[in-house]
Amino acid sequence: MTGRALFDRLCEELERSTTLARLAARGAVRLALREGGLEADTLTPRQVEAMLRHVLPAELRKCGVAEPDGVCAELARRLPAGAADADTSAPEDMFRRIRGR
Image (tube, one colour):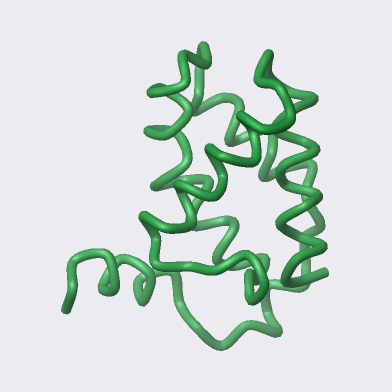
């Protein structure tokens, strides 16, 4: 699962895991994607994994979500695994883009 389907699944799982409404959950994920220099249409499992560890928790804190690190860890367990090997970009590439290097 990649791209838009992965984005939609992530948003749905976030909505189920928190008190965020549908639009708020999608907005938080979109802001995290933007912060990471990523796009919903080309999202890969490896990028989602990195975003869940490094970017989304801060965005969820801004939204008032209790225990955002735990929520993100649970999301990582629920989302499809194993497809990350098909991705050739490393999570570190996302952070280089964030820093502009």
